[in-house]
Length: 383
Ligand SMILES: Nc1ncnc2c1ncn2[C@@H]1O[C@H](COP(=O)(O)OP(=O)(O)OP(=O)(O)O)[C@@H](O)[C@H]1O
Figure 1 (tube, rainbow, N blue to C red):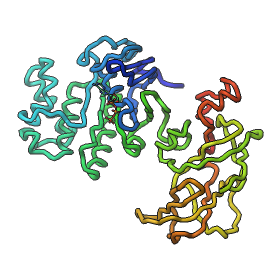
Figure 2 (figure 1 turned 135 degrees about the horizontal axis):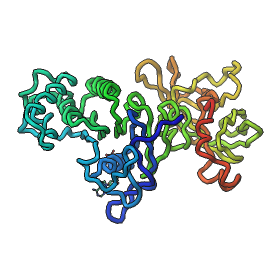
Figure 3 (figure 1 turned 120 degrees about the horizontal axis):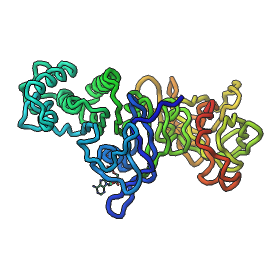
Figure 4 (figure 1 turned 30 degrees about the horizontal axis):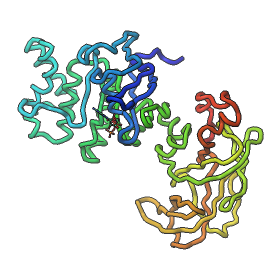
């Protein structure tokens, strides 16, 4: 059974002046859930977070917490705390004063503030740094102070706006882990904005991918990675190789027709809303294999075999990455050993790693509006 939503955004639209930046956002988040808002620059992630926080008012729709409509409430009455990318610490205040800042604003007695600050310092590994100013801290320590200040007020909901993007790569990995462990331990509901796919994948229970102010897909990391509902989501989740094919639906399968650079093959439809005609095929560099063009070994059933020529090879570590020209397209394919430039090769993509999409609108135009139901996304077995 799906848990009752704790934080709910219903049909929210947001505009800056005449420009609509979020449209019809529906998002239900369970208590204790960690949700990542993922998307490219300018897609509206921060705007959605700030709308939830109450700094931006939606032109339509509502925000509610535990069934209570908070759309008209000011930010400090929503039981939420926001942590920014820039930390936004007061430079003239000590660590302890920064952490206690929200409590002081709420006119808590000094001894209660001191107790809570000490608790937060212990929780975040900041004990001993109480009297330092932000300038005397590392980036990771500053971010922990910002987190301590947010958590000190005991919020029900923690909103994180790219809190790790100013940290260097190594520290980012450990703070990522710390934030997630802390969130689990405190059972706090969290919404985390990021444009880093891997960060969203490893931290979140659920990922919400935004595209141009709309939700492109929401699902567990495994769902959005293995069962993207659109070419956009597939590309965003790393299936950047893209070739054009054509085929037709036959029973429970999609029969890909022979083309100038591909042999025919038949892949399970597995609930995919495909229709007869052209399709966009996407796959990841690491999901395909590369063999010499004269390789005659049998491939697993449903494998898409593309003919191409190696353009270049590079070594990013662990494997060789090849740029392979396939007709008008160039795809990237990994292999354990390097193929020399100009080698004629076959690119083999197993059916479970091949994401196929009919052009937008084709399914409704050809098969009627009921042909595609979003819940079918969960049935893209094997895709
Ligand atoms: N205060 C504002 N006034 C006008 N337009 C704004 C304002 N804030 C953001 N925008 C615009 O709204 C759109 C969404 O911005 P937003 O900051 O939500 O995107 P984002 O996905 O968080 O991007 P980034 O990853 O670059 O931070 C952008 O086109 C941006 O230029």
